[in-house]
Amino acid sequence: MPENETLFPDARTASRWQPLRDRIARGESPDAVFPDLQEQFHRALKRVFKLWKDRGVDPKDLFEAAQNDPAVLRDLIGQTWNDEFARLLQDATAGETSPDLEGVLRCFLDSVWEQIRGHLQIDCLDGGVPDSFLNRIDQMLERMIRSLLKNPSRPPRRPTNIKPPPDIDDMLGESLPLA
Image 1 (cartoon, one colour):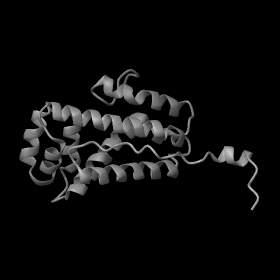
Image 2 (image 1 turned 135 degrees about the horizontal axis):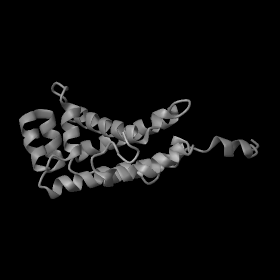
Image 3 (image 1 turned 90 degrees about the vertical axis):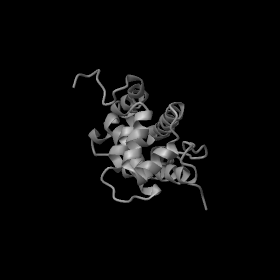
Image 4 (image 1 turned 45 degrees about the vertical axis):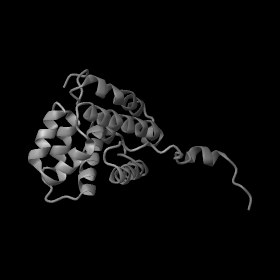
């Protein structure tokens, strides 16, 4: 694949991830990139939900159709003008038998994450992807699922009070507090 091509058919969407990919390629740790990745992930979902609504499709209806009726889901995907993320929802839930809403949301968000993960190429890092980073991704996705279970029509909000874990290198340079 030529260097200027992306895994996303829409270059505007792919460009959202390029700065993060470049930072990781320059050697910045995935944990350091996580706050910006989380921000972009939430912005992407917000944009997708808005696009679906602008085309007359409530995200809740898409998720319920993925749960209950593949024929209705196909019709709704057509109404979204075959949006990439609506098709991703269909693909993610195609093999599921009688999934509940939580299962549909989990399949969808996991598929979105896998697509982003592939574009960022974090699995190409020397030494692999840190477990701390993957745990933070799992926590982020779990929060999103819980939020969407409360209101599947509204994109999940990005938490504002999450602080990144302390940098161990900085902590080692400081003197320990006396007890």
